[in-house]
Image (cartoon, rainbow, N blue to C red):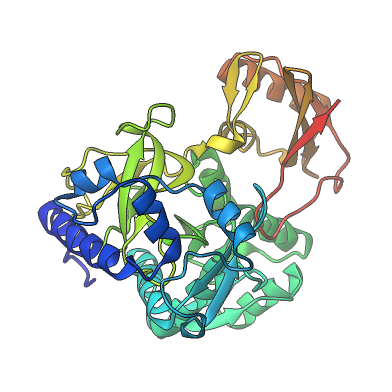
Length: 429
């Protein structure tokens, strides 16, 4: 999409309806999973409107996909074409259960590269930029898409897989990398290592840090901490999932607002309890151009708050805007003494403290009672760890109306993460 040329709401929805009709026509009867699923639901395959699609077509859930792959190993029945048409294999991280395996045709892969290019273009990354990819290239989808998209946009692509944090910092310095792609947690870790190695982050050429993979980029306190550790940079958030692809990009004018790439997705927001449309609730996605391995009305588990459709953003876009990005996940919430607690809320509280280098939340469950305690690792510059713990306890009581035990651990005790951080530990006692 060219700069400053953005379709209006009517054009977006007209294109989505056309794509939906074409997609369903392609799936039936070729795709065994959806042929059986829609027939069982008694759904006619004609689609009168987007509202008609939402009203009649059933949801798809992650549990359903996992069961399908278990029954039809190894890739499941959600394949529209013969196996020899697929050229890419990826799988989910498995942090919330058994990993899902996902195959893509060259056509589906090409469409997702274009979606990732939208993320780069919104971040004003293009030809001549030098992009550091500070992660290992495993089976996760996003890394490969980001790399190939940057290559297509004529960026110099610097692969950091298999390197230590020190080696990555040196590669960034030696090649004058001006864009960094990683998780929010790893951007914090790189800054920590830079300080240990006496490398000033302000001396590097980095001007844009594109983050994803976990909450953080749209959490104000985490964003502020990253901006303080990487002076002069713009933190640019986005999100996606292996089973759907790259979904959103941050609004160029409004940090913390994510736009859905609606050329590639039909997005809905529902009340998780009633499954009815809602302004705040669970994000539901239908992939419009991943025909080889599609998802219809996929319940992502991501909690969002969306701007009213049809309201044009100040950036000129009419694509659906998610205020505050991904607010949390349904499966991550814990109820502590009657209070709903999300990891993003804990992150917001703790990142407000400059003297907290790392943290861990320990959730204990005994019978039906759930409790939470926090471990904090102070920075080298922290003058009084006991006072820090007291201030953190007060912050939890003020923000969540909960008295949460806060324990100080030794420096270097808590793990550091390159991929998705695993700061929530559940213990059954």
